[in-house]
Image (cartoon, rainbow, N blue to C red; front, top):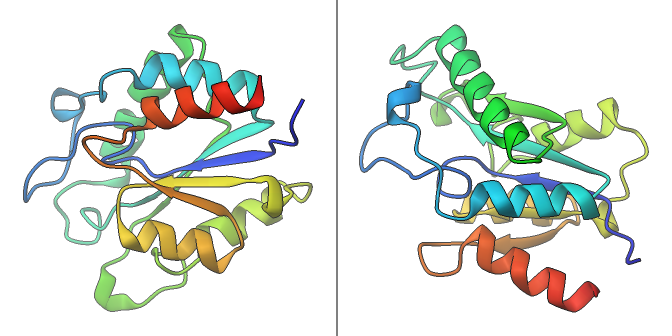
Length: 167
């Protein structure tokens, strides 16, 4: 088996559909991208752990609360679990980009926190999947294998390719 360690996933645009010019604030607005549930189930079997690292400045903008976000994440985790997927922890940055905090991607604070929580993470054998340049920059800063996804090259497509390579 290949040395696959930790999979870091961005949320909006990777796991769920992004809303144009808006934030996903509640369960009604949360829509899984096609194939994601099955992919995360498969990835859960080959990675030691899966962590979500997501910027959520809608909280600082008071468009949503931490409680709203928690409820949305509980729903997401339950849906993934029912399909055999495991997310070990969710990290989110609630700050505005103007605050220039260390946790907001492209800064690597959420990944650094994960290293404190899971000191055995082997960065060289870990991946970050994101849909924006800031995701990729954060992953690159920490030496992760960083993969950019979009509407065409989705998490599901990457998962299929990875499974083909490691068999």
